[in-house]
Amino acid sequence: MEERLRKLWREWRGFALFVAVMLVFRSAIADWNQVPSGSMQPTILPGDRIVVDKLAYDLRVPFTLTRISQWSAPERGDVITFPSPLDERLFVKRVVGMPGDTVELRRNRLIINGTAATYEPLTEDEVRTLPIQPSASYRVLRETVLGSSRIIMVRKAPIDRGYSSFGPVVVPDDHYLVLGDNRDNSGDFRRIGPVGRERVLGRAHAIAFSLNYDNYYAPRVDRFFTDLP
Image 1 (cartoon, rainbow, N blue to C red):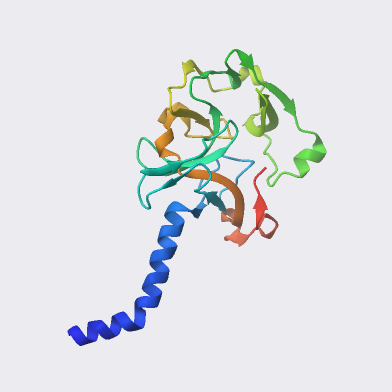
Image 2 (image 1 turned 90 degrees about the vertical axis):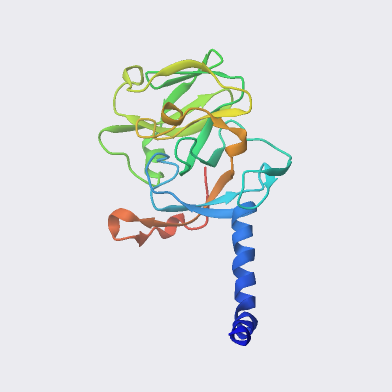
């Protein structure tokens, strides 16, 4: 039996080492994560496999949240991945509030440190370039506040008659307030609260490939190897 185990090790040690290296690489350096929901539409679609730079902010001990070294921090507008404070599920959301910010969402209008975001409807040409076309019940808007801009989806009602409100709240030190770009369909700050800095795993910056769940998992070839806006 001992000789058989030695033989198996000699034959498979190269593969075992490869698997170990890949696991460490995905845990501490870079990873690709599946996006199962539409909470980040229209930026990220269900079925996208996003590339996450796990060295964007710091270096962690593989398979843990323990940091060895830190050289940067999330910025407003970054799309980050983190385990949910509620149930440890992997989430992908956008940083909206920084540590110390006072944030309010008043009927879907974002207010940060007393500055209200502006909302600009996309032109018909801009809407046509989106990876999905919004249904009749949604609008797509460009939200801009404090120099940070992104495209969001809200239910098709005037912005001052939206569905979501909270705050004002002060973001604690070493925490971030995150929201989904699909504002009326996202389990974000309104459900999980602020996200601690120690939970941030990395920054999503590209799409490796994408599958259309509603069309028999057909590949969305036009989204392969594309940067996130």
